[in-house]
Length: 159
Image (cartoon, rainbow, N blue to C red; front, side, top):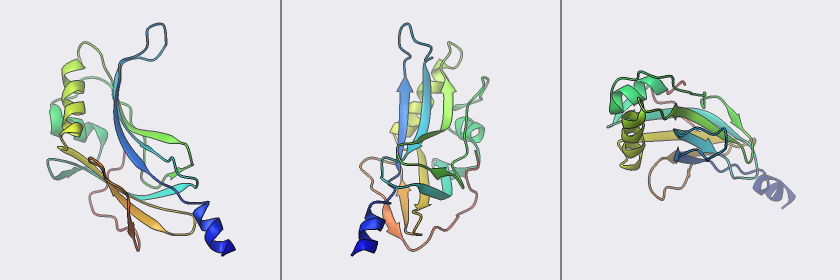
């Protein structure tokens, strides 16, 4: 009984988000489009595999994702590694972050819309500290699905 209570109080819960920030007047926050993984669960999540695809074709990096989806990337893009990362409870990791400038505006809009229309999809497999694992697919109203273990389909998204 006590062991199950400890496990329940250690469960991670990963959510995949896509966001468009317009930047607040008077703040240092600049307009941007970003994709992130957040853990609103109560325990840490160890990310064991990540696959991102555009129109069903896997990509390896943020640059490859943007160019496969929406056209040539001519501005800097921020990225962070999800694969192999431990995401603490309450922590958010942006795995793609595109600042919106007059030059990147059309590309940023196309990228945001590609995620909304599910042309861009992400699959993340993660485990708790007790080796309980779940797989999550981006999309509308998806919940993580319990799996025996995480298998890393190639190619993995490494950014």
